[in-house]
Amino acid sequence: TLDDGRIMVADHATVQLQIGMQKLQGDDNAGNETAIDILATETADEYWPRSDQFNTSVDMAFTQPALDGLARVMEKWVSHFLSLSVRITPMLQIEDESWAWHLGLDAQATSILNDLYQGKDVDDARLRQILCLFKLEAESGFAPEMQGKPVYMGLAMDAAGVVRFKPQNLLMNLPLATQS
Image 1 (cartoon, rainbow, N blue to C red):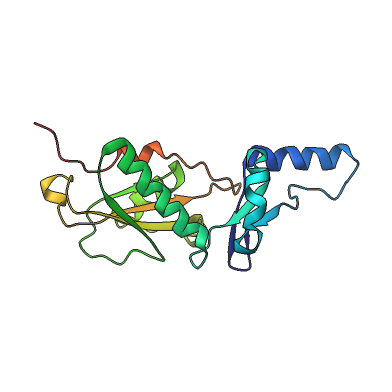
Image 2 (image 1 turned 90 degrees about the vertical axis):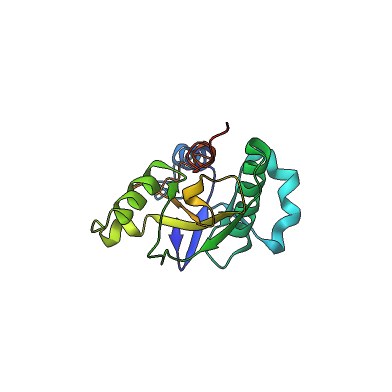
């Protein structure tokens, strides 16, 4: 959910289960929202005892440590599977007249970034679906025409507010050099 500049992300199945439980208990005001504890620096000690329950949310807003944490995890993901050292930096917007490559970390972000790249008008409602933007840089391993150029990445929610992060997009859509 988006709330007062916060981007709260939680496990969709857990949220749906909790909403269903509220409705079964006769809470007619349950709607499609539920209260989930927020994982933050102050509550970090709660994570490990509850990690397998997937019952905490995290704030992915630009100013929050979780966004940087996601960037570090994606760096390790690329390093592990592609043996490629990259640096991923969260960003607020893409301002690059030489924008050469992008990838969406989900279908919504792919569609929105494609439209922006092609210079199409993107209405404000669709732009608000973009939750996070990143810049990925690599010193080597990219195709010659991409050497020294960043890859922009986006993560978005769909119209229902659901994020369907596809980390495989990160591995499959980088402009890697072909091996000879």
